[in-house]
Length: 531
Image 1 (tube, rainbow, N blue to C red):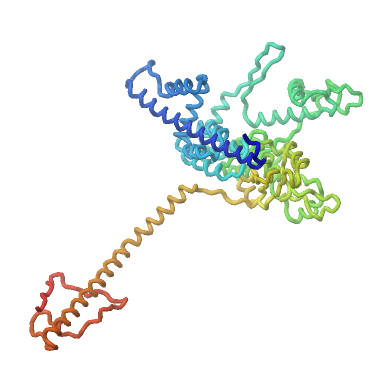
Image 2 (image 1 turned 90 degrees about the vertical axis):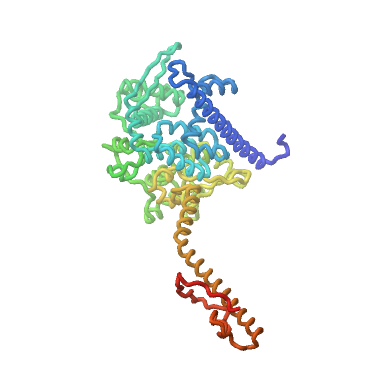
């Protein structure tokens, strides 16, 4: 089927199929929403008070969709629920899906993250998300989640706080025994506590030597037992020269680990309710930011001054300040679509660092650094060059990737998407506050207002022009009467008491631009012709 197509043509086919698939899903969701409307009206019209016997329109639609698509009730119910959300709450996002401009996974994330938003805020939230997503050249699932959560925190901060407080009252930790001698732990705890727990477990799992035979996931599981015992994780390499303390050793004191939270200065000082970003979790509200900041080390984040860049740029390893800025700017791996966190990624030089002559190029400056996960770092390193993947970084931090087939993908930093301060430092363009449809409506309204303002002046001009045309016509008519008199009487004047103007000289049939009609008596009757 595709034997004769080039790799670039095959990728074009893949993209086209993705767009068509999204458009088909959008069409299906629109049909389900329309069916739901029919069945809801039908159910409400059966009986005013059906009581327990009522089969709602949602239940009717779910049953029909499940039968038509051969789906279990849970899956059919999810489809109907998503279709209703797109139709009633997210029409702008639904339009992007129908046009194939976003894929279904992105749309589903938006639906799920906006389920509890106040209906009064949904109209603006829908427009803001549609404008933002449609303007992205590429995006990852984490960027979509961050954008949705940040927009909700800004448009409905009170509701977001209420939902978080309500969820906090439902926190739990459950241990369930399994039949194989193991147990499953499931918990719902506040995001800051979860982030710190995850960081602590990760650090403990990495504290053993390189010869430890366990996988990372096994070491993380064993770290829970060590944490409950108040000791460090023991290494199981079995070697006498292991640099890690032997098993069963006491804890070396209170554990210290780093959890990164990014927020604006106004949020920390309580002057703003702008949300922050918690490493390993995502967007958190301002109150949680201030809770975490209590007793924590606060460091300003920003590009280093130019004077400090000159000397540091000639070193291969970036300084701690530069590395912190790059990770906060990027938040995730900069390969298109990748959402691996920047704090676990490699900081790579876009233009390779010249170890022989550092001043020749590839300096260690923010405009030449980016965060790549290990997989995409290796891809660039070992599959680069003219026939591989190539990257180029623009002045605002945008990285343009060129694929082996010559296609280009633009990756903008996630941090600049969430924080205006980072965007300003990067020189990122300000986001559009209105979408194209609203801008067009505003232009039309302004044009109509201008037309209404000019209508009175236009009416006066129209009246004057009509008077000018009438004056020229009457002068021509009087001149015609004078020529007729000359032909009939051979130059003798008329003695009639009517229309004495017929004896006057011929009038000029052209009038000047400053001519104005004379004031007329409204009771004056027109004269009769003299003959």
